Image (cartoon, protein in one colour):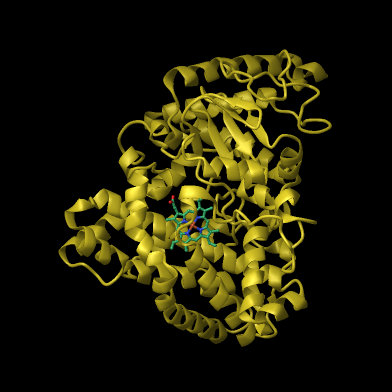
Length: 521
Ligand code: HEM
């Protein structure tokens, strides 16, 4: 987890633009040494995107529709309902940076064409393109202002990327809900972007989130019974025990202490291990892989590498339990389904439950504590309020924090019209849950404010929507409902030990969170 703890110096340079600039430079330097062996294609793709971004990158003046237009990606039709005018030389060229910028633009286009010819292997990308970062970037706990601009002016926004398909960032609540609800138009199957064998092969990705019906329906049905309110109620005493033990550990460590390490991570981790019936050995290694797979700073390659290592761990667990089914979910499924479920599918299911249920809830516990400590009235509502008060606070925390920043990518099954924007079969939609949850048309007045008394126009989308809606939503709510009041009751003087600006917020993670939360009490 150390890689998530930036130095104090790094924390002082958190402005998104400076971060992006620094990383871009770092990537460029790092890539020089990468051009041998198996990473050549990755380097080629990365460089092409990088050069292309450099060539076309400039700040849009006056909103989302650029008065100084960028050229559309070669071969990518200009589909946005905001017309893309005739390509002009990039800004650098117009400003006099001239020949170099033109040469870069030309190189970028050339290389981008090569990508399109060869196809793209998502698992080889060693960084994520600049333009896809907006929905992952935050300023403290808030999404960056650019996300709200996009939602207001271009809620189905085409990201200009040099791929053979178009990628759209969808930010409006109505738009996101519509995509997630429409299983006939959208597929979650990502395999066409992960060609070939090896650590990124299709079968190793699996899991519910990347699966379509009928397989998705069959797999989801197998685990749904474990997540009914009745079954979950049986877990509540266990969660209370885990929480009490972790609070003891916090007290024993003494003030100041790291709440993330002592409480936020172990509570959901131990809960999920118990739910699945996993042995707790190897937990450190496993926990580390959980963080890496949501980390986009090193691109898709690192994330998929972590997926495969984590999956390996689960394959072993499943194989062991085939011989001797344990008391948890894995053992139960083996007893119920026998050979009707393969090890691959079972490991995928366990993996989805584990990963879905660990980082997400850990992020929520840390960030929620931070938010509640900002206002004594909010902390008091959780510490002394009724169950209904706590439920209301938890719902608002889920909306406000939106720790899962993007839903699983959705691929258009056929040509379609999305709120006036024509999409082609194979185009991708990235549905921004943090954008949707701050949409005033859904959240109501002052969507940027944390307000447990808010009267939203419609429910939040923190758990997604439709057939892939989070299966662990009730478990997550239960954990938050247990841990937050217990923490604030046990430590009535709890406070942050450092100013908020010094906290180690994740930089580019699909699941937002804090790696450390120093508190005093
Ligand atoms: C606060 C905590 C959590 C949040 C914010 C959250 C959020 C989400 C979101 C946004 C999705 C994707 C929806 C989509 O793309 O349509 C999802 C899917 C999923 N989540 Fe969660 N989750 C949380 C906790 C959990 C827990 C505790 C578990 C398991 C114990 C879990 C297991 C899953 C699984 C298995 C899926 C895939 C469902 C499917 O594709 O059918 N999550 N979650």
